[in-house]
Length: 478
Image 1 (spheres, helix red, strand yellow):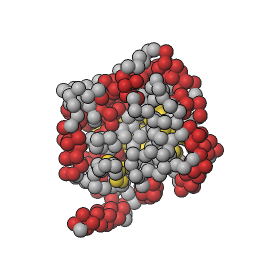
Image 2 (cartoon, rainbow, N blue to C red):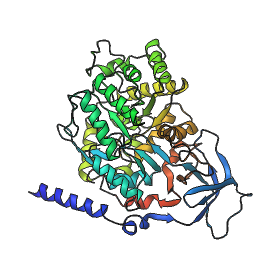
Image 3 (cartoon, rainbow, N blue to C red):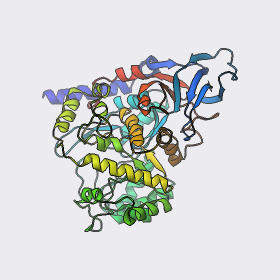
Image 4 (tube, rainbow, N blue to C red):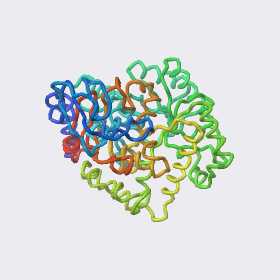
């Protein structure tokens, strides 16, 4: 009875917060809100991969970026609010391309619950100004949250909504519908496109014919399909016409010797551990993906969360046991995650798999592929909105990308995939004023990306710390 009462109270709390207007939900977190804002004496990392530029001034006019130039030559408009940001760096807002609004709740079979309050605030607080949800378990909640954010009734990033998973028979969780065949896949695509979904995600047990049907229907509507695959190989999906593949190398079954058509094998990890990224099999797969213009989404944090603790690098204690992140979790969520961590054996191969995926992602980019980035807040419960997005950028640097390249992957590349690069993803005059203000210099020390203090979305500057404090203990509940 107590459990039922707690659930009712939680639902009522969510409804109450969702119902708040702008004054109740956003104004208390606004740090800068003026018609003209001047960011003076800043270092700019523009998101294109170009070198950082020192001692610059950026003028924001309404929701757009106005003039940009050397601090000594840009005139300050009369009446502007001026922020002297000496020692700070301005980056484009991140474009999170695997950023769910749900979180694992444990159980067997596992259950996932939506984080419609905590996650939108955390994404925005930590610099993610645009997300693609990349799979939904409560699609109408996602669609409603987007409407409320767009209308100013809630606070959060710009959202591109992905429909419920296109999963075949054999789903490991009851929160997913199991397709009954290609016609059902077509019905799913058309129904959710009509509701407002702008992308689709094929899942682990989908068949090739179901995937082909989904891709055909989505492409008729000029919408895209991504996939966390297993039953279908990367090369098969590329030939079918999929637009994007999730999780770097680690969802690939292309290299399993006894792989059966349309079935998810049990030995995929072993095949990846022994894979030579520079060998003909891996290189042929990369060549196919690049030729078919299939993007890859890097989601390194969700795998790192299952690695043994180390002093630095993959499995860093500073990342996996980050107090700021842990404090956002409910007691149950935190205990569940730490208990899961305690069961990880010291000889776990996870770190080696993460390193293998890093090598694959770097080879993919070197071959001309489009790499995009996200965090995937699922797994063992150790990846939290916003914090994981920042960690993804750090892990891209660990993979061998320069800080400037990693920032581009996590910002402009996502915008390019979404077809939004004329508006977001980099810093240029005329683009939307979606920016991160960071104390320090991520170009020299990528860990400084964690020192974000203000996040501008459409020209309004939100206070990072106030947003984080507003959701202490909520992750895992709402």
